[in-house]
Image 1 (cartoon, one colour):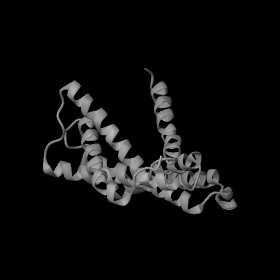
Image 2 (cartoon, one colour; image 1 turned 135 degrees about the horizontal axis):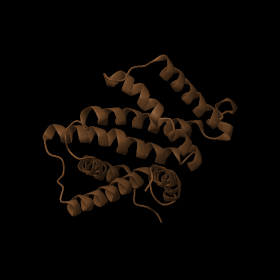
Image 3 (tube, helix red, strand yellow; image 1 turned 90 degrees about the horizontal axis):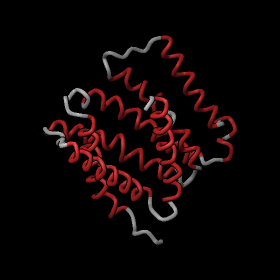
Image 4 (cartoon, helix red, strand yellow; image 1 turned 180 degrees about the vertical axis):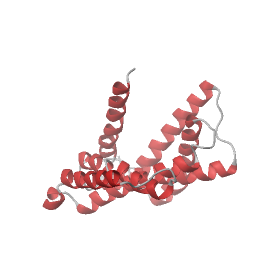
Length: 206
């Protein structure tokens, strides 16, 4: 399978998630949707681990970093996008998500020694953020959309921007497989949300 097909497939799956969040909000609270997403994802990856006879990550330090990565990459941003889509369309939430690599670049320049902020990269970042504001139509007041909802979605993108460099710095050098790390991260997210969601939400009404 060519990288173009893989890229388009990933785009389709990632983009549709915002539509499914919007639909899910008709019955579930944002935290409940987030719990469902990470629990299903964790179960799927654990099954793949078993099929490939791989193990979950080992070491307390690794699990500590996985817990932080779960909060930054799953718990907070997934929930923020859910709350945002209570106020804004799913398409706008997806557009706000496009800010993630821009925030990731900013954080990477600060966190990673091998990343340097050059003049060309600075120009690219400025152009990228300007593009996000153009697509949002910021000068027209978000074209009638809720400002709070858009800011929540942008905050979700910023969480990804912090989480990606964090993962690269503290987890990709552990020598453990990406599948094992991803499964561990989603298990941490599931455990945390399983504790937080029941007291913070009520049972779905329909």
